[in-house]
Image: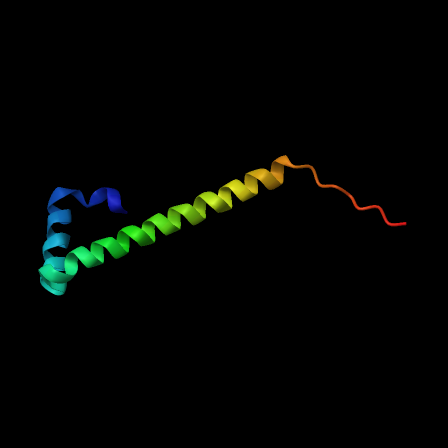
Length: 65
């Protein structure tokens, strides 16, 4: 979906965001989006690594006496 935007579309989105949020709120909004993406990537990596480790470790059976 995002591959079809192109440079003119990206400029249009930025201009609309500038009009809606104003120049004072735009940097704050950018930081919030950046930190959200960073958190999302971190969580995704943790989930993938948890799945990999659970597949690699053989399950131990508990013995009941």
